[in-house]
Image (cartoon, rainbow, N blue to C red):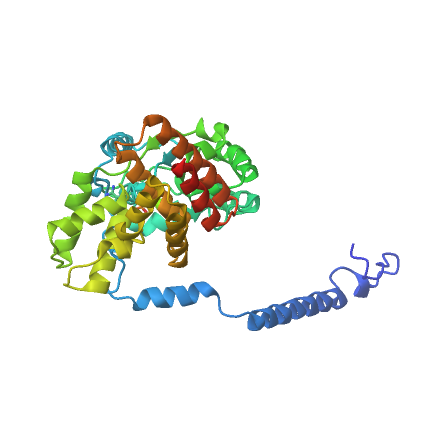
Length: 383
Ligand SMILES: Nc1ncnc2c1ncn2[C@@H]1O[C@H](COP(=O)(O)OP(=O)(O)O)[C@@H](O)[C@H]1O
Ligand SMILES: [Mg+2]
C-alpha cells in the first residue's frame, strides 16, 4: 500500500478512505495528468530525430544521384558475381526452407551484406520482411546492452505462420549482425546464450571481415561461409555491365586501372567508376588520382633513392609525400608491390622489409607518426 495514502478505517464502515474512494481515484488521475504533462514537455524540448533528416535526404535522391553501389546491389542470389560455393550452399538451404545460424566472413566489398539481404528477400514476402528481419550494424551499436535489449526484444516475439505463394516463409526470424568483429568480447559472450535461448524462433547471421576476432563459442554455433575477393573476370564483366547501363564509355585501359586499384573489392571498383564519371564525365579520367593511391611519379623516385642509399633525397621525397597528404600505409602498400616485383632484391631482404612494414603497421594502428614510420621502413630498406 502506497505510503502516502492514509490508513483505511475498516471498523467505521466509512467508504471514503477505501481503495475505491474518490480520494484515491483523483490522486491517480492527477498523477497521470502530471506524467502526461512532463512527457509532453520532454517531447517539445527534444530536437527532431536525426533519422528524419536522413530519410528526407534519401527521399529527394533521384535515380540519377543514387550511388551506383546501391543501385546495382545484387537483389537475388543469382545476381551475385563469383562466390559460387556460397551461393550453392545457400540455394540448398533455401530449397529446404532451412537455415542454420550463419557466419559470413571475408574482405570488404565481396557481397556479404548483399547475400544475406537477398536470402531474406527469397525467404519472406516483402510485406512481412520488416517483421522477420532485424538488421543491425554492430559497429554503431556494439555494446552488451544492445545484445541484451534489442536482440532479445526482437527474438522473443513469436512469428506468425502465415504463408505466401512463392515464398518458403520459414517459421523463424533472421537477425543480421553486420560487422560483428567490432563487437566487444562481452557482447559476443552475451550473444552466445541469446542464440541458444531463441534458436527455435530465430536464426542469426553474423557478418565480419576477420573471423579470428569472433569468439570460438560463437564460431562453433554457425555454419561458416567464406567470401573470397572477386575474380578479375567476374569484376570486369560486372563493371562493364554497370558502365553500359549508365552510358559510360571508357577505354579498356581505364577499366584495367580501376580493377588494378580495387584488389577484388567490388564496392571499391563501382565507387571508383562512379567517381570517374562524376569528376571527369566523358573525358579520360585520372584513376590513380581518384583512387587515392600514390602516383608512380612520387613512389618510383623514392625507390630509386632508397636503392642508391641516398638518404638526403629519400628524406626529401618522404617529406613531400607526407606534405601532400599520402598516408604511410598507402606508401607501404605501393612499396610492397614494387619491392616484391624487383628481381634485384633477394628473398632475405624482402623478408626483412615485410617484417619492418608489419612492425610499422602495428605502430600506426597504435597512433604512431606517419612520417617517422615511413622514414624507419625506408631506412631498413636502405640497409
Ligand atoms: N559478389 C558481388 N557481385 C556483385 N556485386 C557485388 C558483389 N559483392 C559486392 N558487390 C557490390 O559491392 C557493393 C557492396 O557489397 P556488400 O554486399 O555490401 O559487401 P560486403 O558486405 O561484403 O562488404 C554492392 O552494393 C554491390 O554493388
Ligand atoms: Mg557489409
